[in-house]
Image 1 (cartoon, helix red, strand yellow):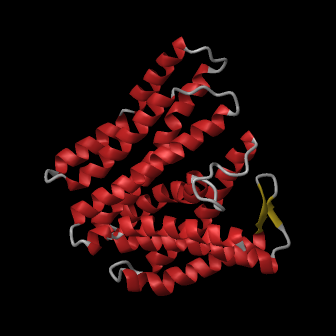
Image 2 (cartoon, one colour):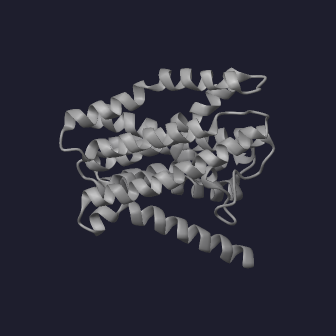
Length: 284
């Protein structure tokens, strides 16, 4: 019973921080301040995820340049966060473009730094230095980039669909699960649970999505629900693969009973690029 209350309390704090900052622009009737508050929360999450990632790959013997890794992640996140808030749209676009196109430069710098490190696999370590920027900072910043275009409630709906898919998959697996989906990386996942999670997510997307944002047609919500449910499962498997490769159960313990930052955001990190691409290229 004690464990249950600890899990509930930590989940409540997480939900309040996430939802409170995400919707702060509407609650305070100040969109720019809301973006700054949500950006501050995302920056906190980025730092936490980056710390956990470097700690996990360190168990494999990897020696990435952590200082550069943190710097790349923060610069990428901040550049994309402030771009929509600038009055000069062209300047904002250029800042975001520069942040993305610096990737070859950052890799070269990371490789040069390895000349002074005693690493048996310097190019692996140089690549690991860039992972937080690509795997963590960029997807999280895309989440904030959607707010000025489609609104905070659409972003909230994306997050809710991920939560519903996870809950549906857990319930469906508990009730009907028989066939293991990917025992090598996640022994607990079953095809039946996954299918049930997809089903409830699609129903939520079709019936609730148009109420959240009527400007987005139901078939687009259906597509977004499918993206969230399928990529959610794959994203969870990716992080499970990482954790199993380094021999840890949880990425961290920031949330008692739930694990670390990466345990909570693993699916969103994989989902957001797909959602952002669909909304930007197909819907808008």
